[in-house]
Each structure stands twice: as C-alpha cells, then as structure tokens.
Image (cartoon, rainbow, N blue to C red; front, side):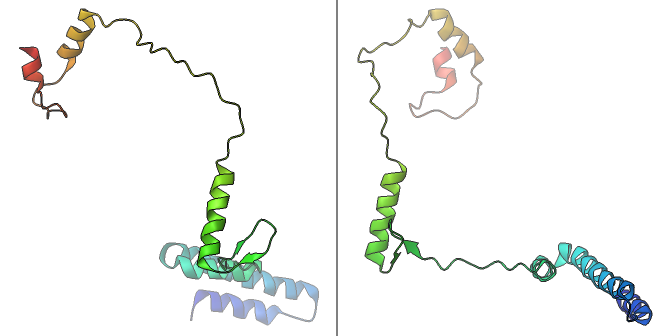
Length: 142
C-alpha cells in the first residue's frame, strides 16, 4: 500500500459530517498532491505542471497564431499576414527624432607614436595563427 493511501485512509476514517473533518480531508488530499508534485519535479516535469494546473484551477492555452490588423480585424491569408508583419516592423523601428549633426571632417585622432607600436609588438605572443594579412608575429619582430 502506498504511504499516501494509508494517510488517506486514516483521514477518511476520521471524516464526519462536521466541517473540521471535511477540512482535514481536503488538507490531506492537497498534502498528497504536493508530495506527488515534489517527486515529479525531478522525473516527470510535464506531469508536474499538469498537477499544478489541476490544483490551482488555472489552465494555460496555446495561442492560435491569429494576427490582427491595426483596426483589430483578424487577418487571413499569407500575403496579408506578411504585409502586416512588414507594417509592424516599420512601425517598430520608425525613428521620428531629428537628424543629428554628423561631423563631416575626418578626424583621425592624435598620431600613433613609435613607442606605442614597439610596446604592442612586444606584447604579441609567439606561435599564434596569422591574421587576415598572413603576417606572423615573428616576421613583425624582425
């Protein structure tokens, strides 16, 4: 006999017509369900979620995949759906801000000093793969 069945038998025997007995019985059932859920958490998550929904009384429903137009009408058809998605993306990324003044001068920054290049070459590791220019560190150090 399962331990939860024994517990159920003990509480059902104490169940009387009074409210206290009913509440004890309901508590017993919830305790059993909670213990089952704890056991299912490791081995049967799908069953666990089903039992949680059963206890809480909440059901989750999958979306039907309907797409609605701007006015709320349901769109039917692949072409209209694609048009609505394009409209949604345009609206999502629409930028109404004013244009910023973009600097048109090519400012390259301060000149690179010889010491900076030498320090960078010394920090490079030997035996590594070459870059897109196919020049190895050993050739640069020569």
